[in-house]
Amino acid sequence: MKQGDLVVRKSYGGDVLFKVEAVRTHTAVLKGTDYRLLADAPIPDLSVIRDPESTSAVQQVRIKVNDSLRRMHSERERQAIENEDSIRHALQQSQPFFEVPGKVLHLDGDGNYLKKSMQLYNTMRVPSHGLHVHESQMADMLYRLLPQIQPDIVVITGHDGVLKSRAQMDLFSLSSYKNSQHFVNAVRVARDYERNRDGLIVIAGACQSHFEALLQAGSNFASSPGRILIHALDPVYIAIKASYTSIKDTINLGDVIHGTISGIDGVGGIETMGRFRVGLPKPKITSSSSVLKA
Image: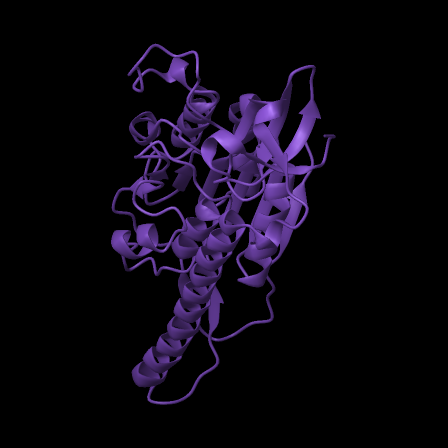
C-alpha cells in the first residue's frame, strides 16, 4: 500500500472510498474522495480498490450527485424562464434584461474539493472567489478578504470530525471536534463584518461538524445536525441556491436541504433571503470566478 492508493475500510463495510494521503508504520492517513472526511485507519483494515467505479459506495454517491446536479440545472432553467416572463408582463414587451447572482467567497481546507467547487460555480455561472487555506487560518484570512471581496455569500468548509478520544457522549463540546472551533471562529469574523444574516449569508462546516455551535456563532446554514458525513459539494449546492434565489424571497429550506446529497441529517439552517437580482436594460457585463492565493 502506498500514497495515492484508493482504499475502503473493511470494518466499516467499505461504505466510503478514500485516497491514501500518507502511510505510517502501522496506520494510513485517509481522505474521502467524495465526503469531507479526514481519517486514519490500521493498514490491515484497508482494502485497495483497483476499479472504484464498480464499488457500491461510489455508485450510490454518483447517483445522488447526478440527481442533485439535474435538480440544480432544472431549477436554474425554470427561474430564467420565469424572470423573462415577469419582465415581459411588466413592460408589455420583450426586453433584454440582466441577472446579478450573489457573489460567493469560498474558503476550503481541501485543495481538491476547492477545485471541484470552483468548477461547479463556473458551470452555474455564479461569480465566485476561492481560496485553499488551512482551517486554523480561516478566521484571519476572512478578516483580510471580506472588505476586499465584499461577497454576498461566504462558504467556510474543509475537513472536520468527531474525535475518537472525546469523552463518551460529549458531542456538545467544541473540544470534541477536529476543526469545528476553527469554523466557529471564522463565522464570528464574518458576523463582525456583517451582522445582518440576510446581508451576508454564511454557510459553514464539514463532516460531523458542531451544527449548534455554528448556528449560534451566526451561520445561516451549517453541518451536521446528525453528525454524519457530508458530501464535498453540499456547501456549494446551498451557496448556488442562495446566489440564485431572489432578494424578494426566502430560500426554501425544505428544497435546499433535501436537495443536498447528505439531506436533513447532513445540513440544516434558518430562514434566509436570497441574493439574486434582475436589472434593466442589459449592459455588457461578465461574471468571473477565481482562485485566490494566500
